[in-house]
Image (cartoon, rainbow, N blue to C red):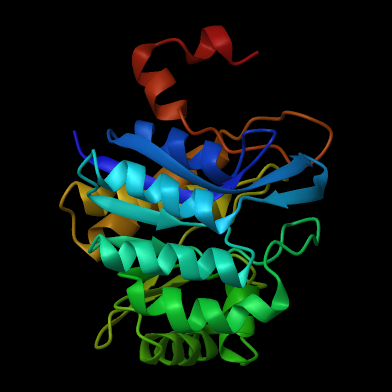
Length: 271
């Protein structure tokens, strides 16, 4: 079993962040480990507060993992401060981290700033060059590149700009497009478009975290980038199709639907 590390924030209601990452790692047949960068106050209705973990503790968590356990892939999620980003980048370089997937989480669905504006340049300078795959959605890609992105040609332009920043592979997620939910993958030479039907549901909490974690898990298992992305897209599509209607707001995806269904217990537990 491969070991995958998530470096991200904690989500109180379990649908996104560290909690979604660990569920995804398990569902993909890998062993999950975590370095917590922040503790958020959130539920399905929004994010209401955040306490950042000190850089010293973040560095200590990373050292504790790498000094003891082989890490086959790393997923980086919420990193809100310059000091946090520098601590992570320094330690990942020190430990020669491989298969690093960066999900540049910036703003929650409820509009809460999950990254301080001044930290954007540090993320571009320190983390994107470490990324084997970077997975921004359209608003995040716009912030990173300064471009207006509203169609496939502008997605391709943004992917090329982010690639020039040092990422080895760029996945621009098209969920915010008006028409279909088409993603675009660029490896520096080839453009691949990945189409999927738009699923009509409000319960999409943690989709970005889940997708990037599934990519990391499959890279850890030795899959290619394209294969990892395709497997991750299939996984998140099913998880959204069978999303859980939990809470009063935007419910989480169903990370274990395929396992529950295969075990023959979904009908028993779904209500």
